[in-house]
Length: 463
Image (cartoon, rainbow, N blue to C red; front, side, top):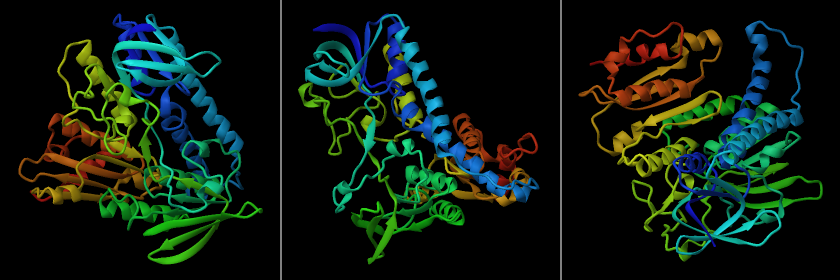
């Protein structure tokens, strides 16, 4: 059995930088990765999907160019080239991250499947030929991420070659008709993307509306945007059965508002959510506790119930975002090595859905303000009143902020629009710095920018 100072299981956006930092701090460190170095973000998440979203936007703009006075006789989507472009960027990121790790003194990289066999002891079955090896460390960090939830109550699902958010990235032909089960962030991004590539797209959402966690006006605006692009959206929809004929056509039986419908498609994407990858870790062997969903339970310092064992990123539940995973790493590292006293308590959770236009979100929503019984006001500005949006030819969406009328602090914001995530980030910086909306109202911003219209957004509030 080989002894290390620290073992990291999973090379995601918390595990990979933490491994380097611990090694550079003088700790003999082992990082174990069962698949591709860099985790979901680099290989199956942010990097590949946002690259493909960019390709889809070029296709969309090509179809709209005549409105802007630029005549293009025609264009076609080469799905193989789209995939190659995506693969090239993914490989560059993956290989760069791996090379940096392999060149780090005190850091060993091992590819294999890790399982706990005892207290702070793991066994790793290598991906290549060879016997399983055992390792032990006083510090262990679990960063194994999450995987697609596959529903178990749909008859015939196992009989079709359904897609996940990982396998859909490898398509080399545009689907004829893509049926998406799930109307949240992942499903909507893929739905708009493949509609722009040329697929017929149908989205099925079991809730009463898309993006059920967002405010109703946000949900309605995003739904309208998708429908305007020709995407079929069904809410209150439950898929009960799939049947596939030799012709490769798939027939889905769906209950919509309690009435049965048959939908024929060529491809099915399962996008109902993700669950933590803990089922093969053998956490019971080391005494680490999980909740009923398999999430590792941690405190605000990301410590499990076992001293010296930490969980970071999606595997612990909570907001499943790359930037949260990375922030987990910075908290743990600074506490351990720099002897700080940081925690996850009250940290901001910004996020962005990369449909086009984007949805950027920070802080509490109007719905949450209502539930909390807060005294609040809402400022709202359609993008049709934003000069930059008018000039660039895309006035879809709106800016919306929830504020405290007494303190004049910004409590939260939602921005649907081109560069919505960047506009939201301006508001987040204001929230972090305690800059009140009455100051932003008269702030001098460069003209014409999207953020300049934050002046007009807060002009809509009566003090």
